[in-house]
Image (cartoon, rainbow, N blue to C red; front, side):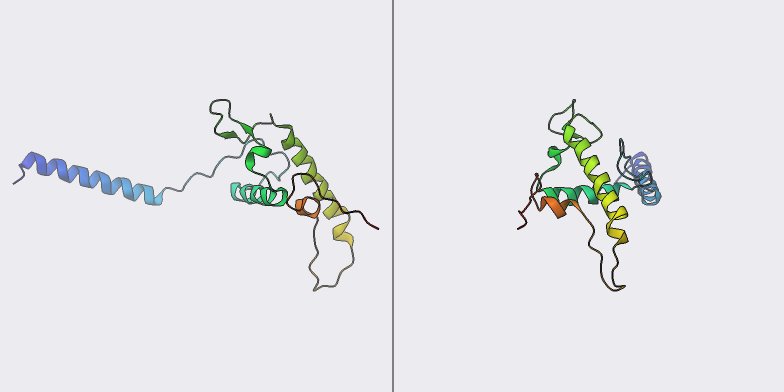
Length: 138
């Protein structure tokens, strides 16, 4: 049998664990902090940026390291906020360009109410390649 002291220790341990689990169940996770976000709206969420990055990877057929520089502390990780890789600024310029084309030109095209407007995206020119793919028009 357990001694009175051991029973108290077990009871305290179980209660502490229960309290900890209860607190964790009600604590809201902190949103991931975005740093150095220049081409997205100020109120963009981590999820929205993450989804956009996934789309960029698919549209250009690249991986994160194509635009993001390695971390100075650990070169096996990426420093997502760093501007050390010049391709990151090119990407920002491309984002602004496609946004301008969509707002200034595509949105003004007449279309039927039921037609879905095809917006200009990275894939419009890149088609899965890091360098834009162009076909000669005859």
